[in-house]
Image (spheres, rainbow, N blue to C red):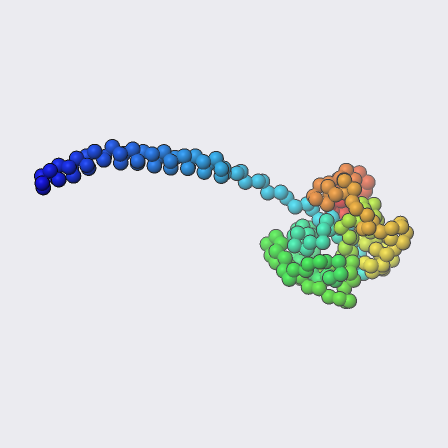
Length: 234
């Protein structure tokens, strides 16, 4: 009985070897199919190229001892300080020294972050009311003092924005506050440009494009710029 059982037991193992090989082969085929399906379902996507942020749109006074109430004007594309401030400091840091702090009136800024990372450093943000004009941005630069800019509402039309920039950066203009300049523009030219939706070309420009009228930059041939005024991004 023992020998018969041994033969039977040995025969069982000998006969099962092909089955094991078939099972292993089937498992390997299944694994390959899973790998192929994974490669098909989850392809490696190419990394998109980084898109450069559009340049800040500014008009600044560049000379003269009496700067008046404003040092120029800034026309942001949105009311998002996190996305707008880096482009602004990229322009102002080389001109005025590193901008370390800014302050705004919260009336027109829905979110005011405490700190904003910009190129190479952090800008601290504060807000004050009623000390700061709702249409003004106050900037403090390292070693250079204080600067005040008119903030032109983002959806202002191009013609109205150009007039406001010229008025805020004019050394010989009347010493008006930021809100007074906005009110004067609305009174002279009717309904506020901020009350209308932007046209297709303006909407594209807000997204970072450049229209034919606003593509001029300092140094470009064309209409000469007034002395003592630096215009950027227009």
